[in-house]
Image (cartoon, rainbow, N blue to C red; front, side, top):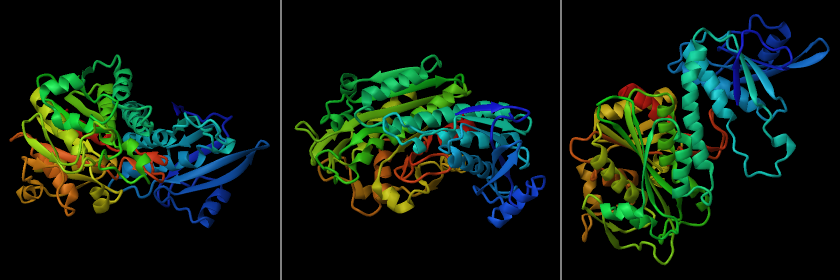
Length: 484
């Protein structure tokens, strides 16, 4: 989506839109439009839209309104986002190629105006690469938005917001790709291309290097696949001598469940079991693209979980890089096996000030929180609060759940140090408790279980049906608030 700021609206664009507040911002419009909006019960509620038509010089023009809600809302910027996104959702496939959006009637700050543009761009993102017979009326037509009436400073605010949009779009693209296209090695190549020329340092470990390091848990997950497992680290040094913030993502590019095979219905969705790694990659691209004044490292454990004759078996015992042994009772509880080695390696290699991991880890998280919040587990109250605040500010919401010694006994193994699954109760908590055993004493750590958030079967305010991009802007905001 191309965005152009201009002082006056071009006269050859027949679609004009305006963002208005709840019950205000329409006083100067033609009486027929105002009366029509009232008759349609449009009053500027958040995300509400209204369309009318007008004749001028023998040409019919389309006029649209979108509501940004109350001016004193607790998170006004997100409401403005919903207004901008609603306009794009309405006209993306309308046959119109350009739209003028007037931001001068909703008492917006520069940051709020930029938020509207941000949401327009993200809602316009689509991925029709593999659709060769798409019907004409289903094709995207809207490609350019002209912004008028923006308050002073909006273009500067948008310059930064656009780098965040770039990262979110990268996350969406990675998650959308099918597993025959995106697998550990090609994930790495996509990141090499995206970060080329940015100044970020990329490190890749193959299976030989990981075997020397003793990553038996991560390697065990991938041993049934023809695709080689990888560790990918993207390092950005923008903060001088400060200890880095380390972000770790689970990157299971396809998860069959291994020998503990998943039911076939819905297994196709498991292409997005790399959503944690996708969020880390997109977050890092935003952080690097805006040249953040912080030291940040994104670490991704990339594997494919397949059930061939060499696959890991239920009951196997593996030795992790930390030296702890794990009894693998269920090969479909593989994400924690990937993360435990990635987390230990990241701590050994980078000595982080704080470490945050993201993973589509448990179906139990969806049962607990649905698709409204990601789960947050942490050994540090300050870190947990900082992540919650970043989630509230960006709309990538989090809800904290407990961990603690009482849950440890649920994952004790009779023949190894730990087993990779506990009983049915507290499934997400015992998964987090498993990871906690691999965090060094004194290291602030948080685990984000985002199983219900990375993919949606219905459109949202910054995504169409499919990949949501969840996590990328959360990480960027967290780094901006805490590490810069």
